[in-house]
Amino acid sequence: MSAAASGATVPAVEEAVRRTFGAAAEASKPWKLAGGAVHDSWAVDATVNGASHELVVRVSPGGRSDHEKTIREFKVLQAMWDRGVLVPQPFVAEESEATGESYLVMARVSGESNPRKLTTDAGLGSARKNLVTELARQLAIIHTVMPGDVNAPGMRGPEPGEDPLAYQRRQVEADYHTFWLNPHPAVEWAFRWIDRKLERFNEPGRRACVIHGDLRVGNIMYDENGLTSILDWEGVHVGEPEEELAWFCTRVWRFARPDLEAGGVASREEWIQAYEQASERSIDRDRFAAWEVLQNIRWAEITMMQARAHLDGQNRSHELAAIGRRTAETELEILRLTGVVERVTNAG
Amino acid sequence: MQDRPNASELLEALGEFMRDRSENARDRWERFQFIVAANSIGILKREFELEDEFMRAEWQGLDDLIGPEPIPDGQHRFAERLQERNNELVQAIKAGTFDDGPAEDRLVRHLYETVVNKVRIASPNEAPASAAQ
Image (cartoon, rainbow over all chains, first blue to last red; front, side, top):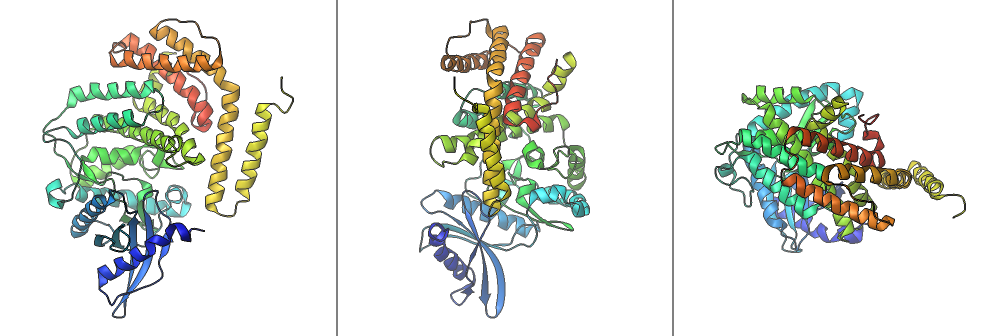
C-alpha cells in the first residue's frame, strides 16, 4: 500500500494548513493528487471561522536541497499572481518543523489537466482556440517581469550581457556531457549548426526576462472555455520569449497531434503570431528556429537522463529504460528542423 | 541451433501476453506499464531481426566518412569498435572536417540514414515511409 511511503508527509500537510490560516484552522484528511517524480501534491480543505478553503500542498522530500527551489517558485508565483497572471494563488512556503520537508501551499484550481484529451477531444475545439490566444496573452505579461522584480533565490540565467541563446547553448552542451550514454553524432552536428546561426545573430545586449521554463500542454489547466491556470513553475529561470515559445513546440509535447507544432493545439506560425499580437514584440523566425533545435536537444538529454537513472540504479524502472530509446525519434526531429531530411530526400 | 520457437517467435508471444495484460489491467497505471513493456518487447524483436544489417550499413557509412576499416570478428568486438568509430566521427565533426558543403552533404546523409534505422527499431510509427534514396 502507498500509506507507508506517503504517511510521513501528512504531518507536513497539516502543519502547512495551520501555518497558512492559524492554529484554529481545521484541516480535512488530505488526499494525494497525481504527483510528479520529485514532489507529492496533496489536496486538503481548510476550515477557518466557518469559511472553507480548497488548497494544494506540494511537499518535497526532506534531506534534499529543495528548499531554495520551493522558495524560488513561491516568490515567482507571488510576482505573477500580483500581476494578474493565471496561476494558483500562493500562500506559504516553509520547511516543516515536524518532518524537515519543504512545502508550498497554493489555492486549488479547477479544471482539467489531461494534455492528450486537450489535443484530441472533439468537444474542446473552441477551448483549444481560446487557449492559444489566452496563453499568448499570459506569456506577454509574464515576459515583462525582469529578474530584479521577483527577488527569488537561485534564478539561473545568462551572464550580464550574454545572449540568452548563447547561454542556454552552453548549458545544454554541459548537460549533454553529463548525461550521454553513447555517442550521438547527430546531436554534435546540431550543436555546430546552432553555432553557425549564433555567429550570425549573436546579440550580447539582448534583453532577458523571467520565463516559466517548462511551458507545455501538460503543465496547464483548462476547461471547455480554454485556459484556467499555468502550473509547475519549477523550471523558472531567466531567458527570452523565443526560448519559451519554442519549448511549447517540441515534438514530444504535441501528444496525439504531431502535425500541430504548438503543443498539438495550433500551428507554429499561429502560435508565434498570437504571441506577437499579444506582446507587440516581433519574433525573429530564424532565431526561433535555432531555439527549437536547441530545445529538442534538451528533450533528447532528458531521455538520456531518465535511462541513466535506471542504468545507474538510482531508480530501477523498465519505463525509464524504455524512454532511453526515445532519443532516436528526437534526433530525427532535430534533423527535420535543421533541414537535413529535406536536403537528403531531395538530393536523391 | 535452438529448437523452435525461435527468438523472434518467443518475443512475439511475450509481446502478446503483455498486450493482453494491458487490456485487462486493474488500473491506468498498470495498463500503462504493460503497454510500455509490450513496446519494449517489440523493440527487442525488431532489433533482433534488423540490427545486424543496420550495424553493417552504419559501419560502411563511417568507412566513407573517416576511412575504411575491416569489420572485426565477433559481435561484441564489432559493437565496441562501432561505438569507438562513432566517437572518432564526433571528434571529426567538432574539428570542422565536415563544415564545407559537399563534405557536410555526405555527413548529413549518413546521420539521416543511421538515425532513421534507429527509429525503425525504437519507434517505427515515427519512421519515414521509405528511406531517402
